[in-house]
Length: 182
Ligand code: HEC
Image 1 (cartoon, helix red, strand yellow):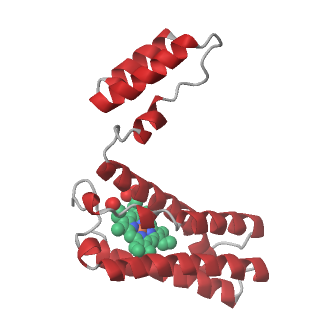
Image 2 (spheres, helix red, strand yellow):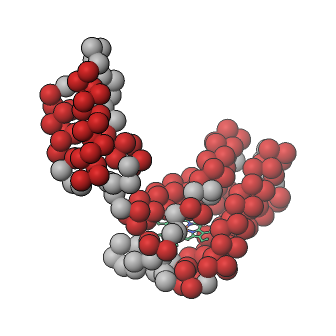
């Protein structure tokens, strides 16, 4: 408990608003007789608007989402090329995750996150060609949803499955060629 309070105070030192919200948590914890559950300084900090800046949060969110999308997609690409066998359970899991993850980047490109390298590989064109970029985000989601459907009905590396994977892969490449620093 003492350690977590110390931790809270250390984090609180990063900003006045955070110090205030941490203080509220500290006094709330001090008043409760039962041992406090896992300390929750970070969510409280974010809810209060302190903690990592909006810029940093947005960049971290999209990088994390894309990194996971990349991890889950790689094997599907290999299956579509015929260099890896199709496994229904594995493919279904990967595709479901990609479909969910495809919804995250859309909220992770606020204007304040147009800061260029070294913090982000997103080119400034994302914000100057916003309508085109948003359309690519939408197409990507639509193609991910289509792949969910195709996989559910075909349950195999059919031509339809391969075409749906290729369509998704073309979204990655098309967007990266235009909007991502190499
Ligand atoms: C609508 C545009 C768009 C689409 C579609 C897209 N990406 Fe990206 N991707 C980006 C941008 C922009 C970045 C750079 C993000 C940054 O650095 O802030 C990125 C970054 C990445 C990264 C690096 C993440 C990191 O760790 O920094 C990977 C991996 C990646 N994308 C994989 C994929 C894969 C795989 C697909 C398709 C299945 C895909 N992306 C689809 C725009 C897109």
